[in-house]
Length: 316
Image 1 (cartoon, rainbow, N blue to C red):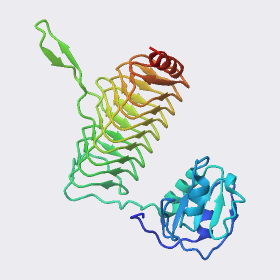
Image 2 (image 1 turned 60 degrees about the vertical axis):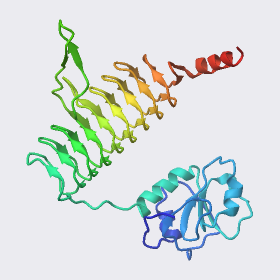
Image 3 (image 1 turned 120 degrees about the vertical axis):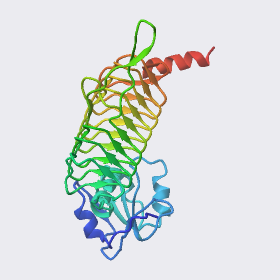
Image 4 (image 1 turned 180 degrees about the horizontal axis):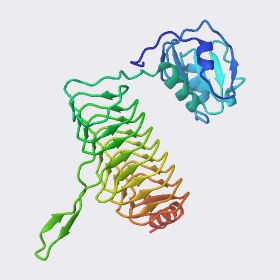
């Protein structure tokens, strides 16, 4: 059951939050909904959904205790008479939209007294800074942004509007870059730039985004970065891309728009990942990838080559 309880919602409230074509079967505005919930077992006062194409959709529809279910039109004529069914083409998306609009807890905008914020920081009234967060000099924070507990924003970090940075993230620490002198003694290369995080970005807990050396590390609009990700100096991640947990992005690598970097992927430094590209789980990428490609493996290769190689290995 959801820990985020809402004031009571009824069918009319729910359909008013839908922004697409829908049909309703067994409409009943008397049903009271106070939360979102799992399909099984479900609860009478929770809204739920069944994903389009789910292999057990019929069983889920029959067994769920939820009284309002968002599902796709393939479940029409199921014979269900005791539940209200809302038919849409993309049930999961519609469920998410309804949840964000009607049931999501709105963050309380406040500055925790244990946080440290340098006097030069540009901080709007509508933002949230959690316990023991540190925001150093010359940082800028956009309206509606949430900085979680124990986060550190190093000097000069620029953060846009409606950004979420979860607990323990470190933004803008020095990148890892060294040069050797004639005696093979390593010297740190200066990292004198900063980090730019644009509007709508989400950064997970304990993720590190290093500052750039001579130019910024740049996370563009609506990028979503999971927990425990390392983003090295001078990386650029274009709009709407996802980087999933435990991934590592080497310095000066460029990730295009609408990419999906799966869990535990390693991208070496100074490579380019094209737009609309997917890199499979655990892959190690050592060279450029073009647009609209799927790569897998270690070392990573196009999906077709990966499958052919696996087939050959099985036949050895």
